[in-house]
Amino acid sequence: MGRVPLWREFLNSTINRNSYATHVWVNLILMASWTKREGLNRGQILVNMTELSEQMNMSKPTLRKAIKFLEEREDITVKRGQHQTLITIIKWDRWQIRK
Image (cartoon, rainbow, N blue to C red; front, side, top):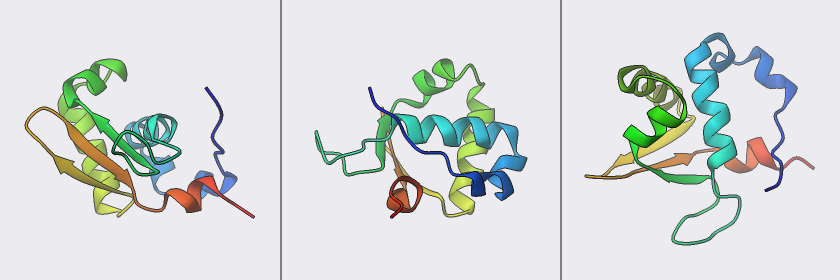
């Protein structure tokens, strides 16, 4: 499976002050593609929003609000399709690669 880093600076992030956004953000990082594969670039997730809300045990309106919050902060981009949604973590390398 693997691991992902969660940096301490996250504690000072406005994401961390919103419990729903925190829950969504951490799950998106864990679910994101860590390498280019199957038509996805690094930091991208292809999801069905209904399934994602069930997986996170979160209502769809609450999930939508948390995703909108992350979009407005410019942490993610969202491309909605009829059945699936492509979510891209904008600064994937910033959150996952530190030298």
